[in-house]
Image (tube, rainbow, N blue to C red; front, side):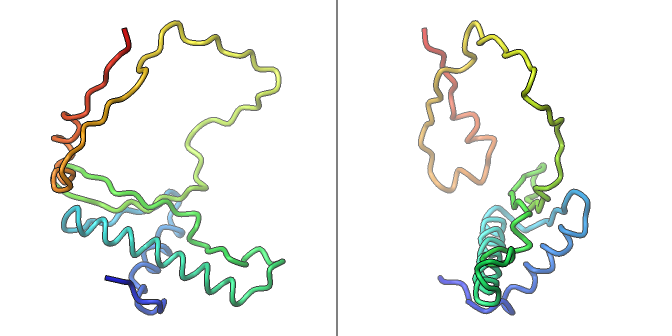
Length: 145
């Protein structure tokens, strides 16, 4: 099913984005299940696209707002806590690590032995993805001999 092309159909998404921008780090929003999380995340991304398209029509190409959305600074992720699913809307402009200039730093020596050479991914049925614990157990990490 296709999504509507009017921004009026995405007022809930716009409200979530605005709340995330008002917060210093972002927000989370609880949804009923994994399918609802996927659907909402899709709507959030599409809402952003509509904002970009609208700004491309409104602003001239030399304007910083041309083809961009204020909501591009928000990262939308699905996370599971216990048996509940959440959409996290996190600000990407919130730095959590320490920034270091590379000038004058001594290069780190290469690791003596790689931790994981490759990952073998075992195909799973789409419905199994809902229970991430089962999926994780089916992924085997193997080390080259």
